[in-house]
Amino acid sequence: MRNPFEYGGVVSGDAFCNRQRELTDLRRAIENAEKLFVFSERRYGKTSLVRTTLGKLPRKNFLSAYVDLFPTDSETSFVAAIARAISESMSSSVEKALETAKKFFGNLSPNISVNEEGKPNLSFGLAKNARIEPILDEVLETPARIAAKNGPRVAMVIDEFQQILEYGSDRVERKLRSVIQNHRRVGYIFLGSRKHLIQKMVLDKTRPLYRAGGHYPLGPIAEKHWQPFIQQHFSDAEKRINEDQIHYICDLTQGHPFYTQHLCHTLWELCERKAAVTPELIRAAVKLLLDREAYAYTTLWESLTTPQKRFLKGLASEPAGVKVFAGEFVSRYGLSSASNAQRVVEALLAKDVIDRDNGSFLITDRFFRLWIQSAQRV
Image 1 (cartoon, rainbow, N blue to C red):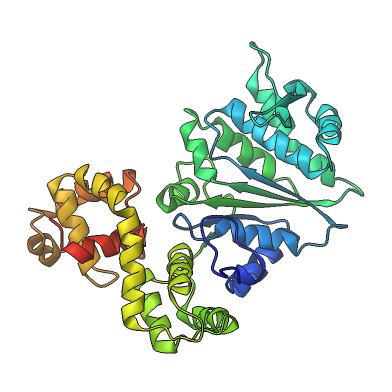
Image 2 (image 1 turned 30 degrees about the vertical axis):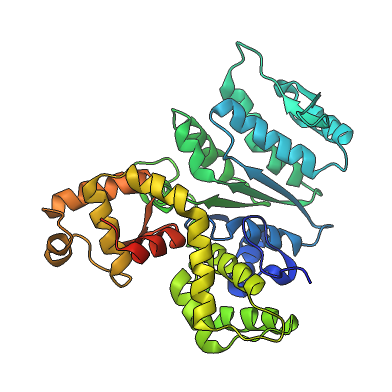
C-alpha cells in the first residue's frame, strides 16, 4: 500500500488535510475579483492550497494562471514568467501556447526552444534596447483584456511574490498598483513565504502596494483537524494510532503541515500492519529524521555566532510566545542586552532561520528545533 502521507511537493486529494475554511475564503476572493495577499512560513502548503482552490473553480467560467516568481531575478524574467503562465493556461500544447503568446505578447518575441531534457518549451526574448515599461504594461494588462466583455473571468496566482523585492527597483510594485486596481473581472492571489517581507510590502505606508489588497495570514493546521486525518490514514492500512499519540506528534511539529506529514510518513513506514503506534515508536521516527538531517543541521549550527546559538537554544526551550527581548530571557540565555538580542533576531530573520509569530518568534524548521533540543547545544 502506498504511503498516504505526502510532503515536499504539491499535495492534493486524500493527502490534503482539511483547510476547508481557507479553501472557501480563497475561492470567494477569486469569485469576487479581490486582491489577496496570502502569507505564511515556508512549506505551509500555500501552493497546494491555492491549486486545490483553482481546481474547484468552474472551467467554463474561469481561466486560471499560476506563476512562480522564485526563479526570477529581474523585471525581464518577471514579465517572461507572467507571459508564459498566461499563454500556457489558455492552450493545450506548446504550439498553441506560442500562438496565444504572439497574439498577446508580441513585444516579448515568443518562440519555442528546447529545454535540457530535449522537450519543447515556450520562451520569450527581449530586444537589447527595448524599454521595459511598455512591456510591463502590456503583460500586466493582459488578464483584464482576456476577461473583457464575454471572455472568461481570470484567476491570477502569483507565488513567491516577495521575490520582486530582489529586482533592484520598485517599478514592478508601482505598475502592479496602478494596473490591477482597475481590473474588475480578475482575481489576484499573491502568495509569500517570507512573512515579514510580505507584511512590509502591504502594511508599510511608504511601499507602493500599501493596502493594495487584503492580507491573509495562513496559520498551522489545528490538532482537531489532524486527529481524524492521521487516524483514518493509519486505520486504512490496518495500523492503530490513538488521540494521545497524535497529540504528541502535533506538539512536536507545532501543527506545521510539512513537518507533520513528514513525521507521519516516517512513522507509518516504521509501524507494522496490525500494530499500534507508541511514544517509543514516535521517538524512533524523530531520531531517524534528525539523523538524516544531522549533517545539514551541524553545518548550519557551525555557521552561527555564539549569541545566535544561545538565542536559538532559548527559543527551542521556551513555550510559544516567549518575550525574547524581556530581561528574563536575555539574562537566562546570556544575550547581554535587549539591543544585542535585537541584532541577533535581525540576523536570523535574514538567514530565514526564524520567523515572526504573533509578537514573538519561532524556528522555521521544526526538525531543527527538535535537533537543538535533543542535544541541548551551545
